[in-house]
Amino acid sequence: MQTLTCCEICPRGCKVNRLSGEIGFCGADAVVKIARADLHFWEEPCISGENGSGTVFFSSCNMKCIFCQNFPISTCNKGVEMSVAELCEKFLALQKKGANNINLVTPTHYVLQIIAALDLAKGKGLDIPVVYNSGGYESVSTIKRLSGYVDIYMPDIKYFSDKAAVEYSSAPDYFNIASDALSEMVKQVGKPVFDEKGIMKKGVIVRHMMLPGLLSDTRKIIDYLYDTYGDDIFISLMSQYTPMESVREHPKLCRRIDPKSYDTVVKYCMDKGIKNAFIQSGASASESFIPDFEI
Image (cartoon, rainbow, N blue to C red):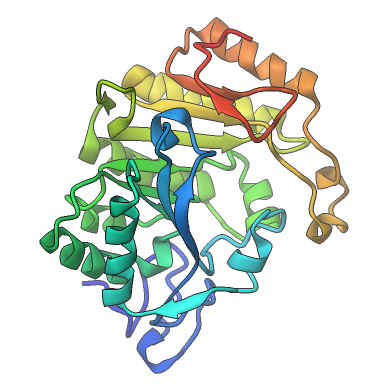
């Protein structure tokens, strides 16, 4: 049984006593801290829709990628502390505002507290889907513990190369760990289900943000996802990588993704016959849409 007194919630297996204030790799103790909770309109269209996704951005992270665009949240741990009861009220407030779902962003290190908050919230009428939006570096045992609580899994698959995973995220064996977790996610929630407005109610969306110099990784990840799951999942191919100050010592990461490289990957997906996918427009990396791979 996972506990906060000997934390092994994620693959880091730090075994620190978070209840006594000890801090592991993620930087979080036992008290939930969030950086933002509001309607968000820039997720995939079937998540945000017209009403918005009820996103809760949790502080700290078990990945701490050197290129993270949320560095103040993930690494500097900026945010506001709150109790499980207060987190429950945040969920209910987002539902009252008309959110399509409760979108838990970077939630891994707070899974036990989130489960407790969801139990409280469901007892008070929370009935919209719950989205688990993570970096993909998950323990299968933790994902199993979320069975019955999560309706939509939205993990990243960041790397195929272990060398890149270690260099950029200090995450050894990332691909094998993330793919095992993904298998459990798909097993839990099954094939995608949508309502009459095209809003996802159940399913898995796997995000992959292309990184400079890792085009081969991208192709291998796409091959794995489609060859393993076919149309049982959606793939979200992201071109929005933005070099941050933190990557100055990593020359390969000091440039954006070449639009031609992104277009090449989109064509690669088309040639494989992938239809369940989201791509981003070349002109606006922040804008996602469902194109059925028409550019």
